[in-house]
Amino acid sequence: MMLKVAESRQGSWTVLHVRGELDLVSSPVVRQRVHDAVAAGHHDVVLDLSEVFFCDSSGVGVLIAARRLMRSCRGRLRLILPARGAEDGSHVNRVLGALGVRRLFEVYADTGSATDDGAQPLTA
Image 1: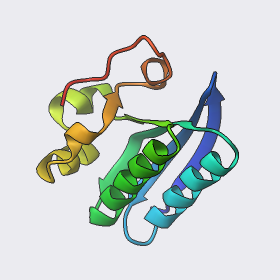
Image 2: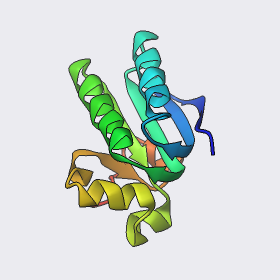
Image 3: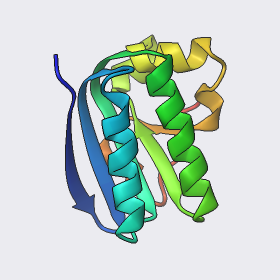
Image 4: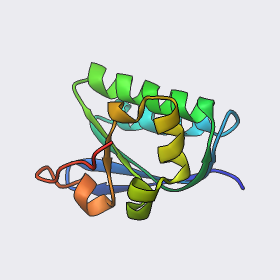
């Protein structure tokens, strides 16, 4: 399945809805979309990964690079993993956990909570 990225705005947040496989071939697309958002002056970015069913180390690398970019411009990066995935372990959540980098990210169950400045992230 080919990767698709759709963009929406929720208040001050740019939400990138990622769908498909996040791998060596497709991960540069996500990297570019995050860079495009920052270049457009949007420093609050949510990556909705609830429809990503496969993520390899290249995808994880892009997530870490996006985190680094957002921190360098004093922005914020939040991830969305499915509510059931946050508890039971979605593929992306399992990969991040297995590599020991899950704790680096603020993870939310849905767009509403990810774009709500008062909401608390899910625990790692």
